[in-house]
Amino acid sequence: MVNQSSRPAPSSDASHRVEWRVSDAPVPYEEAVAVMEERAAAIAAGEAPEMVWLLEHPPLYTAGTSADARDLLTPDRFPVFKTGRGGQYTYHGPGQRVAYVMLDLKRRKPDVRAYVQDLERWLIAALQRFNVKGEVRDDRVGVWVRRPEKGPGREDKIAAIGVRLRRWVTFHGISLNVDPDLDHFTGIVPCGISQHGVTSLADLGHLVSIPEVDMVLRETFEEVFGESETA
Image (cartoon, rainbow, N blue to C red; front, side, top):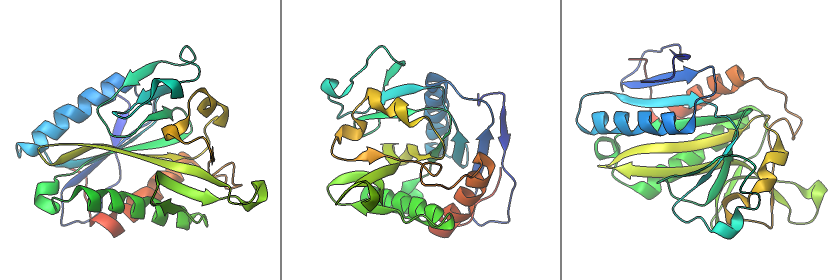
């Protein structure tokens, strides 16, 4: 079941049945994974609509399928969870909006690369609403912000992407740094990249609330993936 603090997001008229859920209280990571796996199986079986789930986690680190143990710098700082998503080590915690996206690519478009590019487009469009220019790079995952004031060529990561598919149904998704404790990222080499830093909307001077971010994520999701509705 979804965490008891979960509530449906406001609905809109739509042509695709994508359910939106918002959890007000931090959701334990193992619980979130169990919910995603159950929902992905139900979507693949045609027994449930697609879903986007917005939430926060307690402070923790996750290790993707490409994680290098040397990139876990302080292994006793927070709980560490191995996960089946792609990628390396990431941090999740309060002040970071996670969106777990469960879509049926077999029905939409069975192209994993195109799906990841759509997630990037979604994040870039959402950041643009806050007057932040997000960019992607061919040699590293996620969405990046140029920080020339910190030095030539300096870029900081503001959003991460990690996906997994089962029977062409996606799960895991994206995380956007709204106002997390950036010091928590120092316990890992985020996504295996040490040459650049991590930032957030608050770090860039944009003080916005989680509900504001949720509204923008909903609106820009529909621009990229099509309209949605609450089931």
